[in-house]
Length: 113
Image 1 (tube, rainbow, N blue to C red):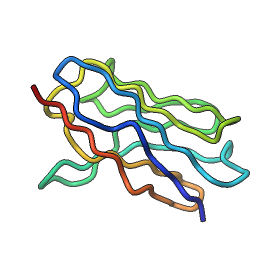
Image 2: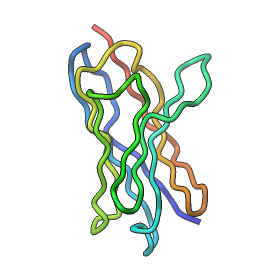
Image 3: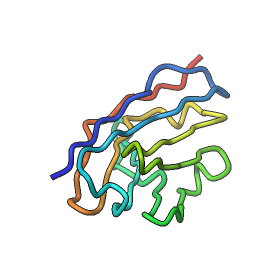
Image 4: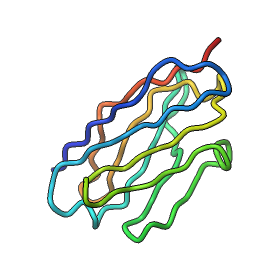
């Protein structure tokens, strides 16, 4: 199993930015595809962005051009840079890896004035 620990959530005004981080345990992090999901109250969990071990990325249409996923294999960490945040981005954000299908506990992002 892999332990994933998210950080970086918080309250931000519309138009603002946040950077989420997800630190992973284990020595084979570089083999994982990593992803960020989010779940808003009353809604299903949805994929926000993913990045393969080779660095190929995929984004939900709703965040394209605003969010950027990246990874640092030396630090066993994946990031989600979120710019131009909107109230509809408010959700709990979860980190995921595909090797063991592990999830983090989530970090809350609230976009409000």
